[in-house]
Every structure is written in C-alpha cells, then in structure tokens.
Length: 420
Image: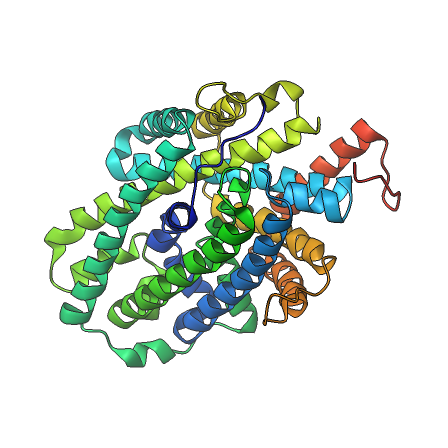
C-alpha cells in the first residue's frame, strides 16, 4: 500500500506548525530586518509579513481541505492551474527548503561546536532523519517536546528583558530605513513564518483534514505572530535599532544587556533546540513534497516508495538528507535565508493563484478571495524587494527548473497541458 496513515489531530498539527516556525528565524532574523527597516520600520515589517503569511495560510487551508494529500502547493497548483504551475511550486519548495535545511544544520553546528560546525551539522541531519523515518507520530512527539522547551526559553528572554532591560519604548520609533527597507525586512521576516504550511503538507496524515487543517493553520500562525511581536518589542526596546541591526545573536544580547550574561548559555541552548525542531519538520516536509512529485514522475519514480511498517516516504527523506549533507559539506549557505525566502514566496504566490480559482466559500465569513489576491500580490512584492543576490539566485533556480520541465515534457510558455 502506497498511502500514508492518518494519525494526527488538531493539537498535533498545531504543534508541528509551531515547531516549523519557532526556529532559527526568531533567533537571528531580527538583526538583518532591523538593518533594512530601522527602528520605526521593524514592527510594521513584522506585521506586514504576518499579514501576508495569514493570507497565504487562509489559501493553504482551503486548498489543503479540498486536496488532503501530501505535496502542498505542488498538488494544488497542478490541480487548479496546470502541471507547469504545480511543478514550479514543488521545485521551488524542494530547492529552497533544502538550502534552508543546510542552513539550519550549520546553525546547530555553530552553536554547539563552532570549530567543527560542519561535522556537527552532518550529525544533526542524520539524527533528525532517523527520527522522521520512525514515523510521523514520532515526529509529532519529538516536536512537542522541542516546542515546550523553546517557548520556555523565549519566555525567559522576554521576562528578563522587561524586568532588567529596561525596555525603552521610545526606541520603537527610532528613525531610519525607507518604504523599500520595510518591504525588504518583511521579506526577510517572512522566513520566520514560512513553516505554517508544513501543516498543509501533512494533508494525507491528519484525521478529518477538512476540519483539522483550517483550524490548525490559523491557530499556529496567530500564536507565533504574538510571540514574535512581543520579542521584537523587547529586543528593539532593550538594544535599540543600531545595536540590534549589528547583532548576530540578538536574544543573547538582550539577556546580556539586562545584566544577566550567565543566562546567555540558556538562550544558546534554546536556539540549538529550536533549530533542531525546525530541521526535523523541514526534512519531513521536503520529503513529502518529493514523494508527491515522484508519484507523478516529476522526480524519479523510485522516490515514491512508502515504508510498509512506519508508513513514511523513506526513500524521499533519505534522498533529501543526502542532498542536505552535500550542501553542508561543500556549500556556502550564508545567503540561505534570502534565497529560501525568495523561492518560498513564489511558492505561496502560486498557492494564492490556485486559491483564487476555488470561488466563494459560503462557510467562511472572511473575504477569502480578497485575501488570496492580496497574498498573491504581497508575495511577489516581497520577493522582488529582497536583497539583489537573493532575488537573482532564487529566480535563476526557478528558471532552471522551468527549463528542465520543458525539456522533459516538451512544454513551452503559453502552451496548455492537461492537469492529469
């Protein structure tokens, strides 16, 4: 049997979404975002990124309820817009998130053993792959424990910052940045939200997906947005825009500035745990999109196998792990956040375009088609306003994928293909 088991309810799906989002982004992305937007622009950029993520989440939830199978927008784009749109979404997701996996693994190495960061990174990839290969229930259990620990660490940072900082609210209006800077910062901050669609890629593994997915996605996203806003206010209020912009570990600097440098190791440990949780979910999510693409022969068919006992896409996840390890050993992932943000924003643009074809939803009070339209425009706007190197690399890789698709299928721009 080549199907995945439905084992996850709403709480498990929310936890996996939290585990995908509460990772490296919250520990590192406030610095470059503050450099782009300045003090007065950081919070608006965060709200903008959160709003676009909400639009995307609404579209993802509607589509996932309609198509409850693994693959996310690869499936939605294919079914609603045609094979090329689906392929481009799947290609962008797999390539961008594979780079993110490598960046996460190297971050773990840098925190745990800077002198042997690559070696530790390889060990981290092997460890999380081993957990994922034991089954999605094991993934949810481990992620639940990681999320609890990370939330505890982030709470410590917020409390210490408020009590000992002190938080100077006047710093929230420090001048600097520009309108384009806010868009650039929002694109970078989007990286810290992007894991919510991890829930949608579990469409084949949740119980009652038409009920579970639309509930789990906004719950996870709303929780994370509140956490990020609190931490952004604390970090900016304690450090100020200039110091925050130059920080590579802003939450560590918050507790140090608050007069408790001995807590820095707690934050570093929390960052390591958080990134491990993200890596765990990312490898699983990329593996399932790879599975969906292999089922339709957009990737080698051998990757479509599902383990007969653990009911996971074991060959796809092993292949993803191998590519991630190769990037860890040989690649330069310093621009991975920008590159990943660019390709993933295009992925969500296709999500919103697919959602626009669904028509009205009589069961929802919100103007879902308006949200899908705003999400489509917002994703493309943020993508093209990312740093130039990230834009060139991201769209270059997407162009390579389009060329490969054309060579394999004989497709040319403007040509229509059947969706099946």
